Length: 341
Figure 1 (cartoon, rainbow, N blue to C red):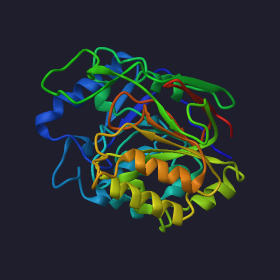
Figure 2: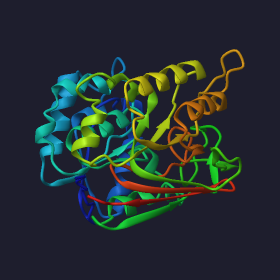
Figure 3: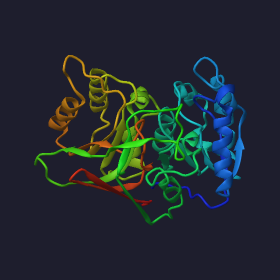
Figure 4: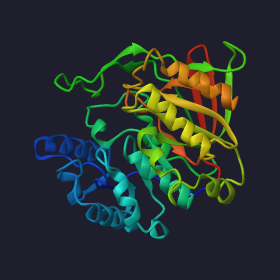
């Protein structure tokens, strides 16, 4: 069974940096994002790691792990919300006592998605792949990003519906801030690969996923036992993978997907969702679409890509462990997540 945390109005949010913290010159961003949460009625508790950054990490691995463990064990905290992702969260895993983690939300993406996936795989606790705290520093959020709060406040046994965005951000413009942080200028279009071209796509199953750059590194380790998760927490129900690429070339993406396949991660998979990517650089004319087409040919499951997930905002809040129904037609998508135990 999957365990779902619940975010109440007025809850306490714990901010810790299990990957990268915020260096001194950017502290105003963290202060502003925290104040926006307080304006929404939450109490914000920031750990020491949130304010430091050196040599690609907020602090030594043991220090980051202890602060994360403490927040995950603190009954006063309902949501653990890193400021953003980073590079070296994987260093923490061996120092975390997963058996002692409390039932609370962890929200984020990028390097944070590694923590999300491991918590769900090892404990069966639902985790939320969505916005970073820093990206909530605006005067308001776009409709897609803003759904994080409703998703985290969904009751067990109920469901939440999210629609694909109208527009997405082509590139970051940090020197040109907007009231909602993002510059949403490009028309969103979800694309698909199926046995029948242009046919509506429907996929169902338990969601699992994250940033492929980092989650691939737990394959073959005690932290990436997908088979155990299937057998002990979802009783063999099919899995819908959502994956997004931060920095990989198309060849590296292909290698990573083949590794996932050979490791059995795609066993009993009912479909795969790929987020929009700022990477996917072609290698010798080998494009991301070629990668997706080859994967479809091998797995024979529907694939949707350029969905609202990952490093090209905005993004939906996707819950690892939730039972999802995905529908894609004419470039638009709807994801309904059922908080099914």
